[in-house]
Amino acid sequence: MRSLRILIGVVLLVAASFGGFVLTGDMLAATDPAAGNRQRSEAALVVQTRPAELLCFAETVEAVGSTLARHAVTLHPSASGRVDEVLFSAGQRVQEGDLLVRLDDAEARATLASAEATVAEAEAAFARLERLQTTGSVTEANLEAARATLLRANAERDMAETVLRDRRLVAPFDGVVGLSDLARGQLVDSSTEVTTLDDLSVIQVAFAVPERYYARLQPGQSVALTSPAFPDRSFTGTISAMATRVDQTTRSVGLRAEVPNEDGLLTAGMYMQATLTLDEREAPAVPERALSVSGGTSYVHVVQDGVARRIAVTTGRLRDGMIEVGGLEPGASVIVTNLQRLSDGDPVEIEPLRQVEAAR
Image 1 (cartoon, rainbow, N blue to C red):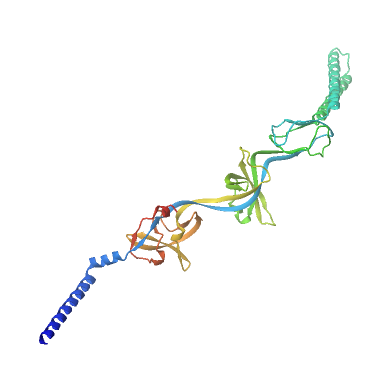
Image 2 (image 1 turned 120 degrees about the vertical axis):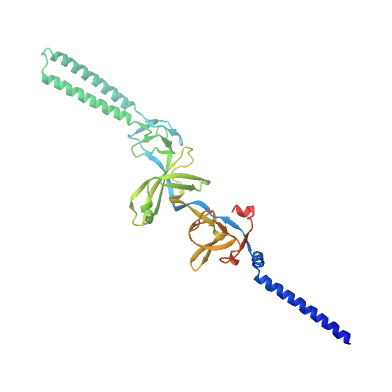
């Protein structure tokens, strides 16, 4: 019995010694800086980062508009008569001065021939009187009468030429002719619509933007244009003209943009979505997911010397998942993960971004 008590005492003594050793080790660890650093290192939060990028941001305004030909006209005959020739087909490209329609001109040609004969007669008479005047055989009054006759003959010839020219319809400029129901032998007059003619080498797009942008508009600004007819293609134009007045009903400013159309894809009357560039600037940008908001203030966390630092920023425009920020230098290491567990001054350990995430 006595030996049992001795054994129990020895066990208690050993347990007490071991507890004191553990307590002493914990106290030494608490006062050892190196040990504290090891603990903090073990507590560092693993995060992923992306550098702040310098991107180009554009301030734009969107509008809808319609396409117009640079020059467009509906062609009418200048005179009445019967159609003798139709020299064009729908969709044909013509040059300025090309003959499109000729009316029956037999009478006009005969009138012109008669007028030319009268002119020749008057010229010969006037020349004969001029020769006789040198000998004193002709009075000045006779010579002036002959001169007047020659002038009237020339005027009648000019009128006959105009009448004959009006029997022909020619293209007033280079362009593409439209549809026509005109047929040979048809009687027409100056009210008859022959066809349309459009100059489509350059397309104009008419659209309007709110008046609040008026002070920031000027010719030469870039416009990006899209059409439902070509959903996979974008067209680029420039502002060529702007209205001098603000529409009092819509409170908008009318604009015209010109788009080169060498390939002939665009035509008049098409619907267009216009995006007008008002301003372009380069600014630092971070992924939108890296942004946090607290009390109306936006901020990001960056890594500095292994510690997370919260930096207040101002935000701007969005572009492809990136947001413009002010108050941050390009290249700063911005934390993009574990933001909900992060506080200012927390130690962090950077984990490399996976390739897919880095490409976002």
